[in-house]
Length: 332
Image 1 (tube, helix red, strand yellow):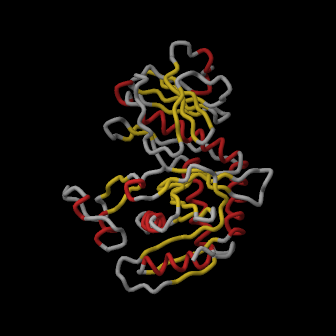
Image 2 (cartoon, helix red, strand yellow):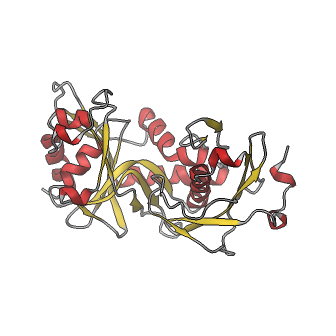
Image 3 (cartoon, rainbow, N blue to C red):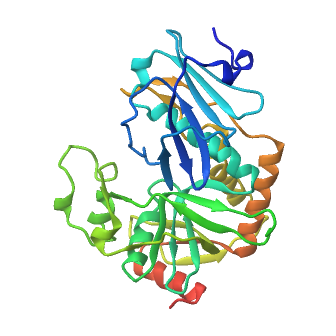
């Protein structure tokens, strides 16, 4: 069994550089004897690939050929070493997701975080973040605002940056620029799409989703950096009975503190994505890259969100929710 603590990266001469992953300026070198033609972004936000080893990056992911599966992280938390049969992960997705975790380590050391949510930029340039549980309506709100002239910063995954020298500011740095739309949102009348856009695959309308480029709906993509104005925790009631409700949440709200803590920690704690084989089998659980420094930075980021304004908003009528948001942020 190969232990990460026993390996000197520079001595791994037999493991060639495969490609590098860059996520919003943070780079990770990946070493594996794989085909370099793979360029699927795997849903990783604001990412690009580089084809020559970056000697300035201290982060790396290394694949070692070994029959028994093992995943180790070095004591400095700068290198993942995945040992397993090559044929299990030869498409490269497993290594890219490990590299994403390392970029998140560097981001949280600098005060930011990657989170599951949606974000838009208002016509006047304000950044608005939408959080919520799975299926709560984050994409629905982002799409409807996009149709009103807002630009999409990110959907599903959003990057937050909090410059340590500007502690009172939070920036929405980017995110995934596609839309995963549920058939149930269309059937409810919340989105201007046709049922015919969805495949008849026998799954429930809540599970049946399609991937759409926002440009197909006439929604602009924001390519810049937007300062965060406010955060909304969304829930669209599917029963049609819930009345509109909007309230500002205080930092003493236990439920919201637990929610924000979990949402901003998923990618560094190792629970967002585990190591899967190309065929979908679970190979290993991703180790946590969290420590006292990143936890402290994340706590400060959460307080920054409260200072900007964290709001709970729910209801059944999408238009009522949008009007309430616009009225609050001064975009009505």
